[in-house]
Image 1 (tube, rainbow, N blue to C red):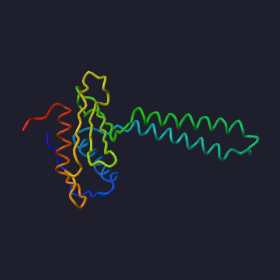
Image 2 (cartoon, helix red, strand yellow; image 1 turned 30 degrees about the horizontal axis):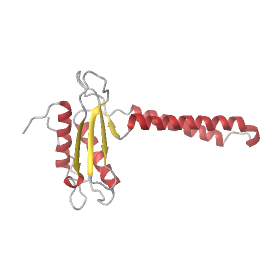
Image 3 (cartoon, rainbow, N blue to C red; image 1 turned 180 degrees about the horizontal axis):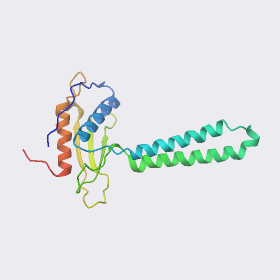
Length: 187
């Protein structure tokens, strides 16, 4: 399945900053996956934003409650308790659901034998080995495929000036998507 290819604007990273490199690669992975017909699923992000807004509202209520300290002690204790509970919930969601995920998707439109994807990546500290993983958003589904991994040195995708060689990177990511879907043709 061919795509229109990468965009014409050049993406440049600071080669001495692994966070910059990972950000550019993650951004490009998102472009490749969405160009293949997968629509981003933002429900988890929206849930995290809602919980964060509740945490902020609790903090504001505690700060600007009309009564002064000795009289509002019970209210402050309740606010602190709720603040801790909602922050714990936020951390639990991040730890159990998100992990290293950079993208959650819905199944492609019109697909009856596919699940959405969870795309995750790793670029360990002091390493040039970037690992990209594609797994099913619903691993217990009968149509879920086995997760696939790509581990490659970032030096294969960047020029010495820090410009991403998008054509090469797109091919690698598209090959990984094909591997996940079982569509790869041996060449």
